[in-house]
Image (cartoon, rainbow, N blue to C red; front, top):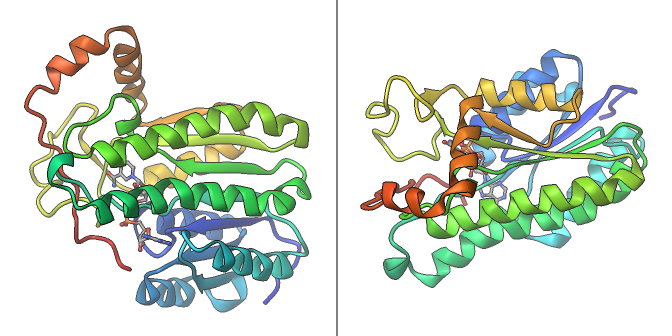
Length: 267
Ligand code: NAD
């Protein structure tokens, strides 16, 4: 398959949730979509939905550098060596109190949510550099505003992603590559624990939001110079409060019990 000169986006975690909605949105705008995930069934239905001529859909475990390299090579072949957007979005939400969390889970979260992002950006740089106006975009989280009890490691990886975006947004200017990220609040996707959406507040910054709202932000970010995108936008206030008065924030989280779904992640 061939992008036939269309703009192209490489999306990890494309089989489900916000990655999938982003694939849909960009496909609708006439882009060529690279969809990568460890969820084979989800990928197959994504290919059926977008049409085999409009996408390159392939299994990819983002923690496997060789595999990531091979996926990028296949993508580059299809696009004539171009990549307009790299969207590092794959993530897992294994949580629980740190003291009880098996160390295998700790490392799985670090490897998928942060090491996978490092691999992706490092390996995709040649394609991004070769594409005028390209963008490197990553999914961080509202848990990157203040370290969240109950999902401490997850939250730490999302801080790492945010910091990485900030530093690279400066470094990559020299290559003409824009770098940005999104900090979503509570988005209605399978990564959430069962019942999380039903019990979510009906309004406020932690109301449940459809994943298409994040996809729209990826689109908007491509035409903008903004660095951090909050979904919903009022989440920025939490970031400001955490910076100005972390002790007050710590008090608010006193008995925090934010747990993501340990079983939600294929592979
Ligand atoms: P999701 O579970 O629907 O999608 C995540 C996808 O990542 C899944 O399809 C999964 O198979 C894939 N994945 C997991 N491990 C992988 C690996 N090793 N290699 C490749 N793909 C892998 O959930 P989502 O909410 O759409 O998650 C997308 C991103 O958004 C994640 O990084 C998540 O941490 C982040 N996030 C989610 C929320 C929320 O409320 N849903 C909030 C903030 C941030």
